[in-house]
Image (tube, rainbow, N blue to C red; front, side, top):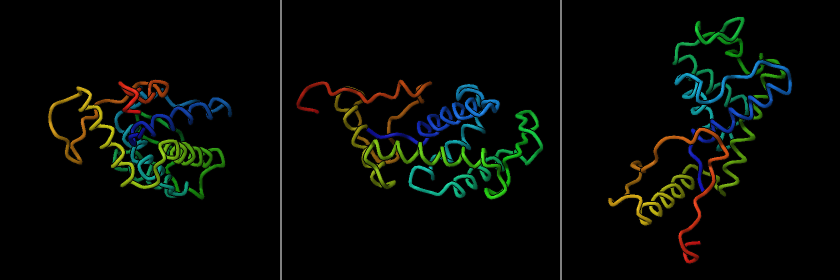
Length: 172
């Protein structure tokens, strides 16, 4: 089993929404309702969090992605105006905002550990192996090359991210 950066970002996003509801903060919209710019920023964040980057580095990656998408620091989070008060240095964040970055790091690391992956190379090799199994089970008819994996969209919720069961006991 392996996870894409987008899958990790979606699970981390859902965990962040749960945290926000526990601390009486207004939760972010569900993943499908986020704009593409916010999904891309979350995915870029997951891409570095999954390999053990500290929360401050994860936050910096998020800020950079948001800046590239046209967001700026503001007094309130406003998707129309593209402003967010969390677009500051990690050390300037409130403890609650820092907790979100710690949560993203924890979710990302946990998902990699669940897949028994510690490095990008291991993840890429596992993803290629899984894709080759899909193709050999009738999922396609062309040889696979690294970088051309047949992955499509992202399931709308984490509970749908169950690994596929082998077709026969020999494949287990």
